[in-house]
Image 1 (cartoon, rainbow, N blue to C red):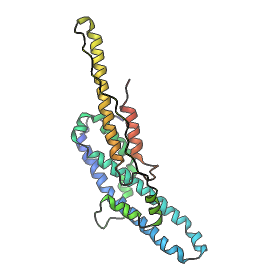
Image 2: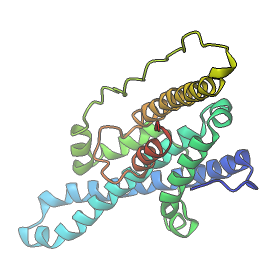
Image 3: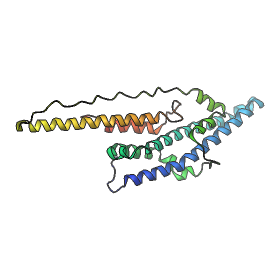
Image 4: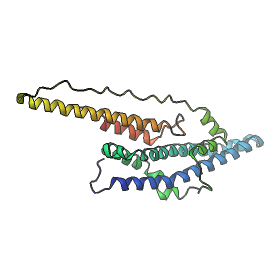
Length: 236
């Protein structure tokens, strides 16, 4: 996905950040609402006969499914917001990689950012920090099971390829074409190392999400990052 030359990348990032900032509190409030609903069923379940328990199973399953989806959405939006906060130099020096990554991630998350969808979500009564999302999960049995299943990520990233300097090069005119070809290859290799380092930083940020280690099978940002790496961080 190529960037249109008429688009101001800085303005585009500001627009993206505003969209994410608008959506995050609404999805957080939805997570809280679903957790409270499941908490109500947890308290109700021991007091009723099996007949009503069987009748409630479909509704509880739907609540659990929507809660897990909300958790996935919050993870994706949190990561995008963190990527948007990368230093300006990263966007200047690696504009193609950063902008194409974010354009893909925003497109994949278009539905959960759409006003037509988030306007149906509850409004938060107060501004909450991301750790509060985990507290919402802890209020119901299903959420606590998700928290207990969280796997600690060691944060291991792929080792960077070594930086390599060229040997002394001949200056005779007869070698000029081959020397320039080798210097161009050296420049391409350096760009590869720099972009690989940036990909590792982007992945490290993703691993710091409040929901890292949970079941995030539908994480859109992970797919965006993997595809961006495959498209950009390659050597011919």
